Image 1 (cartoon, helix red, strand yellow):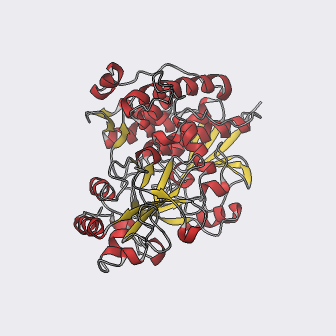
Image 2 (cartoon, one colour):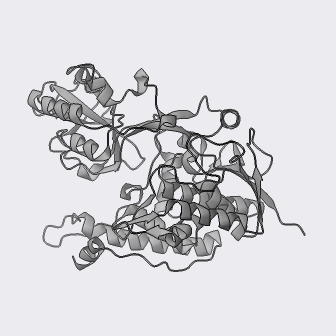
Image 3 (cartoon, rainbow, N blue to C red):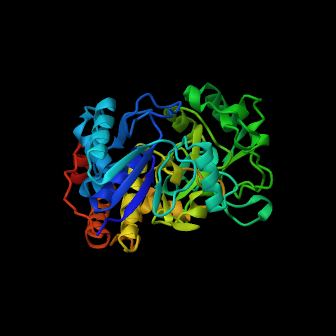
Length: 465
């Protein structure tokens, strides 16, 4: 009896993890990769999972959201995190790798697997049968067009123009207030500026440094996604007559319109993440944080996703994807990586692992599965499937994606205790990892091992406290 076969398009981080996850479950894989026959402007080798920018897969340990996702992937022996551990270099509390050694290890794992057939060449149309599409941010025009046809989408987003996203718990609601313009529904959080505060904010914005894009990802700016720093170059009053207009917003403290207003719009169904409206930006992250924290009410802002401006290709995930990473228009097609709306190496590879696992389950006549909400991967894919589709932007993992811990009641006041990051993140880490491992073993049907979790001083301090 012949084994069932699936197709994987793309041998990047997501595609490599998808192919190896499916093969691990006993399914044959035809893995298509167009390099080296057709190179991209971003790549320099023919190796799989080549890292084109940073060499870091994020912070480790129980205080880090990426640390939880790393641990989840280690527990199921996912290929990318395993290769990263095998080729790591010293980087403080981050998982960083030797760029060439890492991609060489992934390539060897894929090419040596007896159930994986590597096919070199470009895929221009969706193949028949079960397929994982992991073609990345530089998906070819032909494949992108066929994907649009399949999903019914009018377009894929070709530029990742994102504004910073803020954790609701870090917004000072004694300064900000909820309201819509001209007494419309209170769907926005509003941060009011005095003239002095606005001029200080503008001066910092003028001085802030922008990320320098690669030649292949340089943008043509359009009015609909103009970065806030570009708007500011047109004059000191331009932002407050544009995205920072105070019109129709009566500050409840004064009964009048402020000098300027920064608005935030809800990003997720639970209302834990809020994005700055009209604040698409390409500023360097350190400068970006300093500028954001000059907004009244955001002086202690916790940015869960920084704004970015670069070349990208991705689906409007909440319109077309389920949390299993299946396309609603064709459940035999699954999408992973950047194309699915993730941001970051680790996130791409983790969704690749899930897509490959679910593709194999489909091929074996089993139902696809979604990780538990308490896990970081479960939180991420649930966000992709349920986020606000209006202005959807790719997301990286963060603690706001998973449920808070059950509230503890203060015996003296009778009110819920407010926990700081150091008190709540380690237990959230352990809860998420335990939930993921139980799910992986019992529902996904994969082998699980308890991973070693690297400890760092910040984790030890958190435990002591």
